[in-house]
Amino acid sequence: MAADRAGKRTASLRPASIVDGVYDNIYERLMSLEIAPGARIPIDVIARDLDVSPTPVREALSLLEREGLVRKAHLIGYSAAPQLTRKQFDDLYTFRLLLEPEGARLAALNMTTDTLKLLEDAAADMGHGDAPVDRTSRYSRFARADADFHDAILKIAGNEVIRSTLFNQHVHLHIFRLMFHTRVTQEALEEHEDLLVAFRAGDPLAAEAAMRNHILRSRDRLLSAFE
Ligand SMILES: [Zn+2]
Image (cartoon, rainbow, N blue to C red; front, side):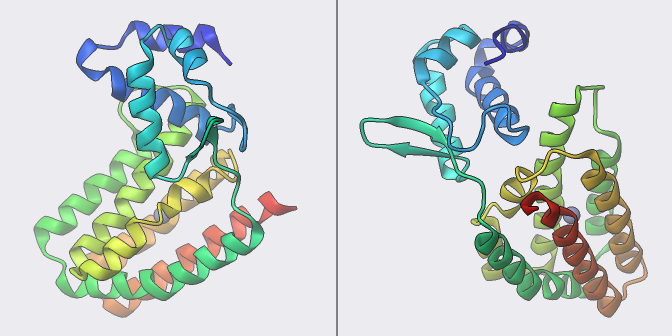
């Protein structure tokens, strides 16, 4: 484990955000595969690396468990969740294709100047980010920002069953963890722009098609993780 880097990150933490800081540290290492799928995550080692007590580590791990990124086994403790199998990957994309194009269509029908502004801001954040950060942070933040962007569209769509069903799968975290690659992020940004064009035009069918295209292309990009 990268004790040095972890230590440096901890130094800048404010006491009030210790759990957040520990969470971010473990989250980034899971997303970049620095902590390999299936690897054990001993609470005492993490606590020592980050120079914190075991309590915030336990809290952070329990948040990550809720997102399906870590697992807890009786007497063994926490470990990184295994990677998606090819079957799980295919199932997730079938599921997304069923719900998200329809979500984009509904969102286009409901779109207002204000909600469009929110989406434009979310897309811009993904493009530039805030501070200059290392590749690992950028990638893991992109996964989160992409999840937020898709969730924002489904909020605007206004069908809470569709939104919560997708949200609870934490699709983006699992698919981004398959592959650590910046091409994934650049191409996704271009496809998001196609979606925004459809939303700006108030065109529900174009929004539906743009979302379907984005999901199909995302699936193709990530399929190479199974080769
Ligand atoms: Zn996306």
